Length: 266
Image (cartoon, rainbow, N blue to C red; front, top):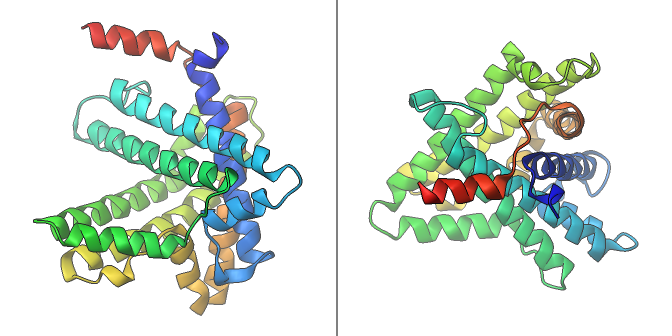
């Protein structure tokens, strides 16, 4: 139980679960079900249909939830020491958004594992965007969320170009980890840019029907088969990059529960 409280457990379990999701998503996009539904929901359904699928899917949901908790913890208490300046605050906001997104993925996986339905990814995003547009300043907020995705895409490109992520890896990490990470981050940047553009168009131009989730963003690239295959392959490499982080990412291990309790007492 004491080990389960540690930051390292949350992080490494989460990176492993993220790697499973991205590798399976790329497999579905390239060699599985094709481009008709390359989405996390399709990944969850494929895991559910395996022998012992509900148990495996529950474990995957737990991993995604742990990663979500790790990201929210990092955002709240600045465990990665990004600082309180504008850049650091922006990165911490991105961490919080990532944490919430992974909690939602975990909930979708757990719901499917316990007999619920996953629903269509695109329909949920469009419905949520439509509801947001109906509230005061909802369009501006949706546009800002889209702008945040575009900023995240730019950040992924910068990380890929500068290989700054390599500084967080253990020196014993294999040499191939850097090119794999660069390709994976670049592919993820493309998908984030598509999602961000769709949200900006929805929020600032009232086009809620154009909102895209991860699967829709990837499917939208099928008009250019070469780009589609490159991005899908890159997402597979991002999954491998997640496994690399699960094994070789350097983490300052600490008791999350004790630090959170200390922060509340201040």
